[in-house]
Image 1 (tube, helix red, strand yellow):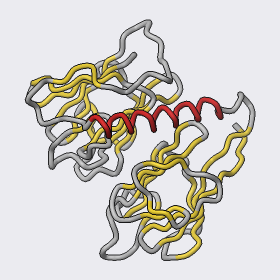
Image 2: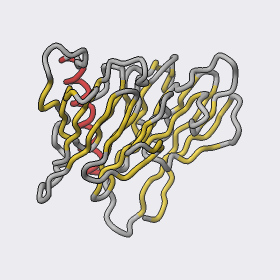
Image 3: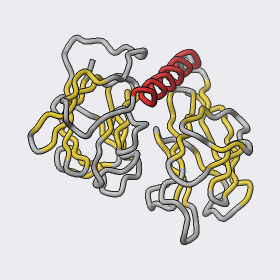
Length: 247
């Protein structure tokens, strides 16, 4: 099982086993929490894709770097070093170890006295959500050569630069950020309003800033999207649809 080691100025702060989805950022709903103003609330995510692991930047302010190069998405290899703000993260694998999709994303070591903590209740809640998403994705995973469902956001009302957006990437952001898939228009729109993560056949929406409504209900934390859900994001109304596509 791969692991990541969080360091600051050559001091080891924390080690975590990498499961199917390991989120990294400043807010307490991440698996790895980095209490630093240089790190965005939801900064990056390390996840399994096929037989390897990938790090993807979540439209962070200061960027994610791998081996000194800024990346948006990068397939990780043993020994790669990621940098988020002033913190570094070492990615390591052990030959012969098998990946378990049900492995819990929990810390395996934490140094007392550091300011990097995850509240127990929030941590348990996040783990339960991740396990539910992973279990569902495994159950719904299509057989080879079958059709798969690809998420699409269709604009129902509001200002946008195109009528619909395909959710092809592992993580798609709705916001004012230049790297957002769905760009919100207007001076006072949030830079990152929501992130929609693809996990197998499922899509999970996470509220980042501002208030988002799904089917008229405020989005709190994470929610698995269903075909036909209507999202209201800072004046833009979007319909989530699943479209069949040949594998």
